[in-house]
Image 1 (cartoon, rainbow, N blue to C red):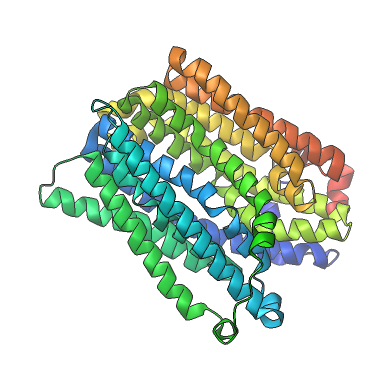
Image 2 (tube, rainbow, N blue to C red; image 1 turned 90 degrees about the horizontal axis):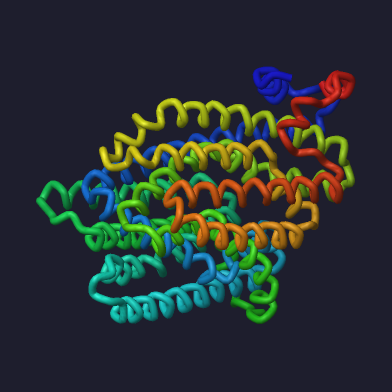
Amino acid sequence: MRLHKIVTLWRQGNDQEPALMTPLRRIYNAALGAAGIEVLGMAIGYAGQILLARWLGSSGYGVFAWVSALVMFLAIPCQLGLSMLILRDVTPTRIRTDAGAVRGLLRRAYQIAIIISALVCIGGVGLDRLLAEDIVYRGPLATGLIALPFVVAGALHAGTSRAFGRIVMVKLLGDISRPSLLIVGASSAIYVGGQASPSLALALFAGAAALAALAQYAALRRIRPSTLDKTAPRYASRQWIKTAAPFALVAAIDVCMRQIDLLMCGLFLPAADVGRYAVAARLATLVTLSMVAINMLAAPTYAELSQRGDLQNLQRTVRRLAHAMFWPALAVSAGLVVAGPIILAAFGPEFGTAYAPLVMLVAGALVNVGAGSVGYLANMTGHQWWTVRIQGASVLLNVVLNAVLIPTYGLIGAAMATTFSVCLANIGLHLVVTRRVGVHASIIHASLWPKQARQTEA
């Protein structure tokens, strides 16, 4: 079935399968909106990164990219999984029936996460003072870590906003306002003749994170249900932390899979090479845009169909969404491979050598999308510990391969390690979903679906 036929089915529905096509249309329409905002956020983000890369040069940009990646990396354990717990437990029904517990959870989550992030920030600034004078990250590290509490607060605001059903607000005030503010700050610094330095860029990064977090907080105060302000908070801190622990582990593994290659490049390679790899890795994330937008909205449908034991409709849903994720990703991949040298030149003449790792990372990202929603399917059907095991093993393998390959092969070694680890993780998750859930999620299976089954499905 071609993609245009799938789109037609989503828009027109199917009289024989209203229970299936209604959520599919809802996912499709919502995913288009989410993807549109995601594209806008990415466009602004890339504009900011191009501006910084041309202003700082490959070496200065490498320092900025490494420190900002470290901040985003540290923000995950600082949350202790509480942002995901908020997303799961703060529901309209729970607000109506147990507003005290909801208010207590929100208050305690913010208290714990902000205190931990502030302590990590203080410890990191102290560690920065102990670094040798000739280490390029000395100074910029302390400046960048100032952003950590604000990044953590923004993540909690995002989880709370999504729990309140305001996904658009999350994107606009988080993913869009922060890079926009960074662009404004960097442009102002360039205009007044500010000296190009990673420390100044990271100070602007921290300022943008702070302003974005404050804007999110102000918006949350407006959409916060009035019931919460009229009820005394009730606390179950130990239970909340215990329940959030698996979420923290999954989130930590996820951020390791996304950031560990760049962070390890900073340990083995000059800052200029780190900057080149950061650009390649950031461009490769464009390939997964369709998958991210659809998975974010399809997860509840996967869980509902699985809980009903409706594997037939679950398979049909997964198959159609596999097409919707893969073909746009393939088009983006082809565009990056063909136009890669031109795109890299926009960051500056020093970034041309990032083309080879870009192609390899694009290939790995395309395999990731082609495997389908295997991670979400495993998590939403009660097999989340398989996800933890497989992705945890993939992270460990990635660390080992990066440690072996980066010193010898440089940027291409980091890309090889990441691509190989991602492919193995997707193979493992595909086996789990196929054997334990009974669903085939890959684009290969979706494309080779037996003709008779296709006719029955359509």
